Image 1 (cartoon, rainbow, N blue to C red):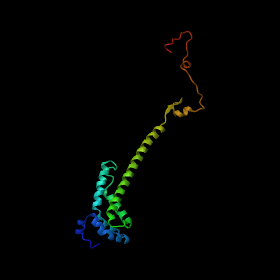
Image 2 (cartoon, rainbow, N blue to C red):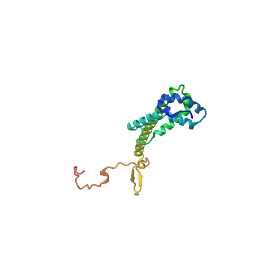
Image 3 (cartoon, rainbow, N blue to C red):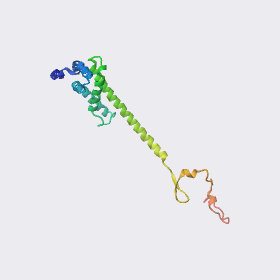
Image 4 (cartoon, helix red, strand yellow):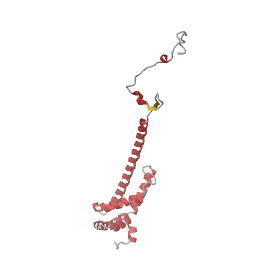
Length: 183
């Protein structure tokens, strides 16, 4: 890696850098040299990092991802890990730039789907919990001894069911004629 000329690498662009460094990346992966691998990938990733920043900003602006919850660096770090683990799956150095952008898209899409699921899940739980709280509310009354008692306890079939009418409660004076309008 010492023979890499940084002045030429900045002028080559993503495709030129990928072609230049691809075999070196494969060798570093085989040697399990993560540090050197990451340094080399950093020279390739500025275009991809800008792409991730743009997509993340758009996702936040469109409401797919909450503002401030995710950082570009998190996606870049995840992309480093995937690149290190899966670099040997890339068949040709020309496929490396496409692969990097594709993996960046997959990481962002997974995050968007996860956020959408979490939002729906939390909304559903909130709706569910509201109906559950309403159903769990107990109605109380006061029994003959002045103690609070659940209304459902008054529905006990062992209690005799008396259907009283107003006439059963008031005693009428048989000497007074009944006025139909006041009844």
